[in-house]
Image 1: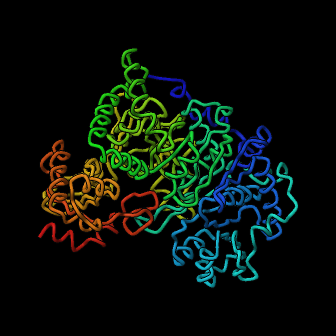
Image 2: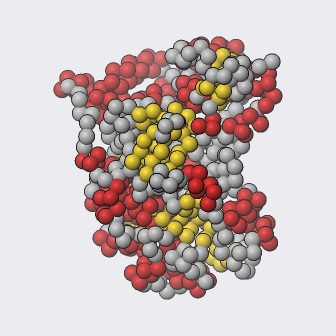
Image 3: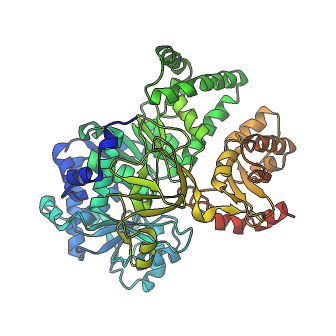
Length: 609
């Protein structure tokens, strides 16, 4: 069960990327593919705008001149706060050619968070998308003495103060010679800092070098089994926050190193529409994105019980065949069966959701229920699960083709991954960060003396080297009876109940495990309509006896595989949707357990009354 990528060592990748920086690879792509479309965006009139790699380079060159005239020098940091727009790519890339370090922050950041992040990063420059973002900086500017310059991209009414520079002003400069400017950048320079979500304390600045990024991109390319020529022109939609390593690596860095055609989608909620418009070849999504697509298809099918039954039967037949096909182990008869099912059932669904030309689909940043992953693979969407963290430049384990649902794959090419004595997943390789900015003690906690990065996750590994993430070391529930329980496993099981959208298990120091579950906003209304239930809001549905009975039945079924001490004994159904980047979910939809416990303290107490 080995292939070429298994035989690639970290040293081989290091030799392959020797001397590479993000600017040098950008220039290589520009030289080889100047007329390839690089960036696309939808205009206000719904037509499309686009820039080729040659256009992209020209705008970067002008921004470099503008940056330098404002005083941006090697080693300085620049904070960017904007949605997924083409200007982000240009302004971020231009910073590298100045030898500077761009740092993206989440658009949801409050003025207080802006102050903390910009101050901690010691940023001398800040650039925002519009006047709304600018106001957050202006409110705390007096507390940011290091912030010498503020810039804005869009200010049609001219509301910004006169000392705020503009994107148009940067573009008005003569272009810098990028070949010369690339010399300001060295492989071991810090390319970017990714701030952690801060769920376990103040956000930490993860320092990633150009070598880290280029090494990781090369490892991913090997895992994909595509040459650089084959990467050119692959369509991808950029829609998740650039403050997160997943989007930064998958669309920004892989985009310029591989020559992707990147369509920028300014609102994550619009990804379904953009997928239908773009038909991406490569797509990354956090589990909630995939769960919502799955739920929407199921809700549409629910309107016709006969079609729903037939589709479910097709899925049941296709799932085991799809798993065999991933390993090239299917028989000719099974292949013919799958092709028939694809023709009559699955192809049309892929077209409807815009994934009919998808060659690689990836989920990560949080666990995805294995049944959801199997469903996508059954309908012909090659969904794979990746695992890693900001400190590993994104990926740590991943299989692009030969997957095992329920696992996060083997170590990426060139990276060593193993379990420590206590079961913690640790890794070592060119993807491992160089430390937390101004946090030597935190760095020493994460990186041991032998260079192993400690993930904080407890894992398992099978005989083929495929890893399974069991839980966070610090998030295990310890009941009053002393039983250590993984909430993530219970939550993944609860989310397989069709009516459930999100789930959070509770029970630390309690006599048993309980859970809070939210109704799926797509599936629950469709189910209610199918069963003749009248309602006005999700809150109404959450209190409906038939809904409560259906979810309790689902809880009994999905808990059957757990021991009695582990099982969720009681659930409270919530008639609201948990939204990303809130007090209960991170921007990538990971649970903020402290936030959930705080918001629902009274409800949790009632569960144990």
